[in-house]
Length: 285
Image 1 (cartoon, rainbow, N blue to C red):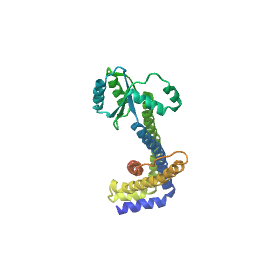
Image 2: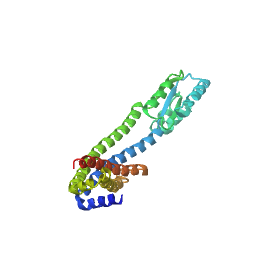
Image 3: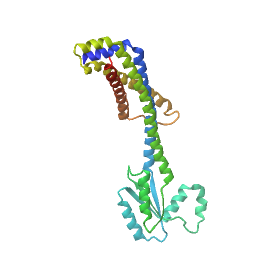
Image 4: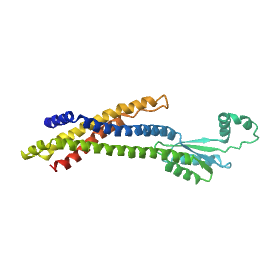
């Protein structure tokens, strides 16, 4: 292993330009992934906050009796998707409307009768607030005789989860494209290093060196190059985060697990690209 490490470091000294180019491409790939990951994480954080406020409102018929209301409330509370059920009486609904809609306060004051229905405000459990779960619960509520209508902002909920999927797909596609370019450049650098040492490699093979022994320095070179790319991408992403956070929009920094996965991905990218290139070209010597 010491020989392989020495040879890998010697390759960096012999071809510094290719090393910098390979590391820069991996850094650019991870930087793009990091930017989209930053966007995706913040969208995810915002959506998580919004999801906590997602609720279904079931409006009740005016002739719903107290016993029927309590029975249905208990049944809804037993749904596995439901975290809490709050009953809002007609009087409470009118009082809330007067407090929240100040511009219509005079209108509500002149009412001879209360036009607002009683309702159930239903909050779902974490992980149960996606569009399909919300829609399924709303349909079950609609089956009760005392429920006249249900509202949960279907289009709004669907758009939220569509935005999350789009952010995830964009991160994967663009990051993958840059990763492929980085692998091609690393493969080119490894191939040039092999050709530069082809006489040495032939002699090693003649004296009995295994293919694994020959390939090891190049794989280590790819690993170090990948780590270098990750080390360059992290401060670049941090710089963009600091430039935007607070001045343009408040952002959350990536969690440590995401950062560790990104740097590990850079190292694996270098190893895979180097291993593929060296396996093919060593056999051609």
